[in-house]
Length: 197
Image (cartoon, rainbow, N blue to C red; front, side, top):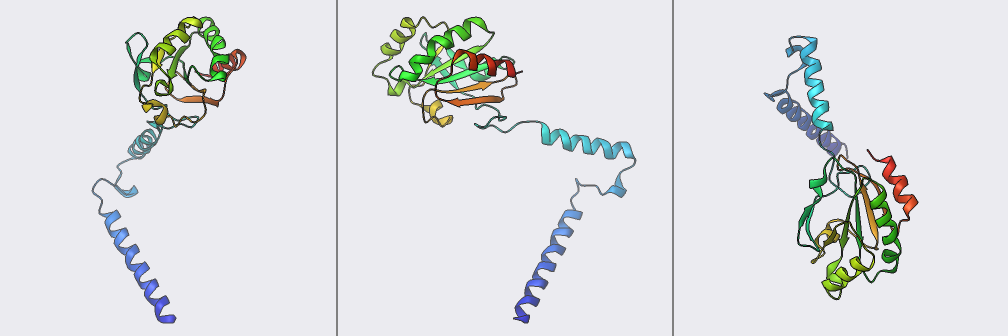
């Protein structure tokens, strides 16, 4: 038993010595004594902080950068989420056959008319009978915001959509500020919109 403990200690010390040797020989790393003045130390610290705070993580949690995507609209235009950087965006995943989706559409239209918000209504087109159903739905509800067609469910998979409707509120910096599973009403839309930058 003592022999094994001695071997573990020796291997650990040897590993630490190798790590310390490699770390101290890094040509890009200066020790405190190698800096010429305090200003140089502060500059290096500021660069390190900027590197750490530069780009937020792309993901689906609140505070993450919303994953970018590109889809065609019902009218054949190509729309990309990143085209709206600097604006507040609501991304809504829905289908015509979904009762809660139908229930929230009039509130979404009112929200779109009343506020300076971009609404990207991503239709799960692969789950529809035909694209004509989507066009008829848009006409029936007199929707003025773009209807994006996710024909292969690529964007739905990118956003890990399970229940529909699902909505993401994305601020002007492209960060997710709110997400909800299920229908939203007008008051909740406005409330979350006003919290965003």
